[in-house]
Amino acid sequence: MDDVKGKNPEQEKILVVDVDGTITYQRRPDYGSSDVINGSVEWVNQKKKEGWYIVFWTGRSWDDYRVTKELLDYAGFEYDELICGKPVTMRMVIIDDKPIDFVHVKRNGGLKNVQIPE
Image 1 (tube, helix red, strand yellow):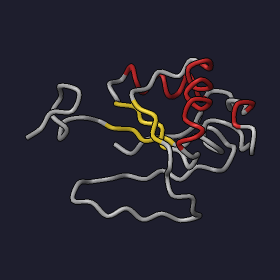
Image 2 (cartoon, one colour):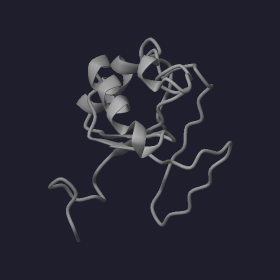
Image 3 (spheres, helix red, strand yellow):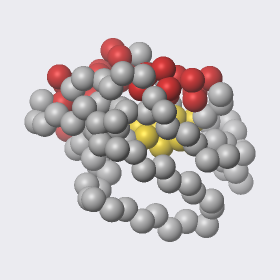
Image 4 (tube, helix red, strand yellow):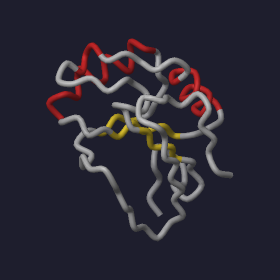
């Protein structure tokens, strides 16, 4: 089995987090001026300390990668990957052979009180 970043992927805890409307207030088209929702940096960084592999997966285009990375870095988020190009839709269903938990959050509500299923 291939290793991901030197770890067995079946033992890895991966947390995938959206950007706009989840950790930043929804702002278009000037993504660079997006404001981070209070408590989001602390929440994500705590999960990183707990051993989660953090992936930001956004509907922003790959053309917006640099400005998005600069925003995340400047805000102080600790994360492992930034992936752009997520399908922009109101509903997403992912079919996989591994257990996946989804947590729906209120748009622009932030992550401060979000609980991850055990």
